[in-house]
Image (spheres, rainbow, N blue to C red):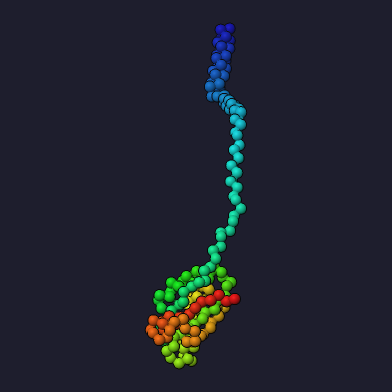
Length: 176
């Protein structure tokens, strides 16, 4: 009986060892604790500030063009512009661009030196030189009418060089 007891005892120990051994290898996976549920903090929704109301845009005041321009001067017996005339021409271009639909008459003149035919052609060439300047500055060529007056309409006497210099000119007039 002792043997039986010993066998039973051995079987019991073996069974316990096996159970313990198997328990040691079996690890219980711990279930993760559920994350604490946080109540969302109510966020106050900010609406963008309304844009300041713009006052209705008023068109910029249109500056009236000033067509009261000085005469454009030329060298003796030439339709080459005097360099002193460039500032007058540039001012004329700026004023003409303010009224792009306005049409102009370019009146060419000469002093009394030379034949009337030569002076007439010279006055036309002078008016065309001014027109070319304007067209090169971006103005429309069909807005200019060329008129040659030759020596017929002096603004000063042709008896002095000072007077003749003043007569070698092109005048700009608004076409009616």
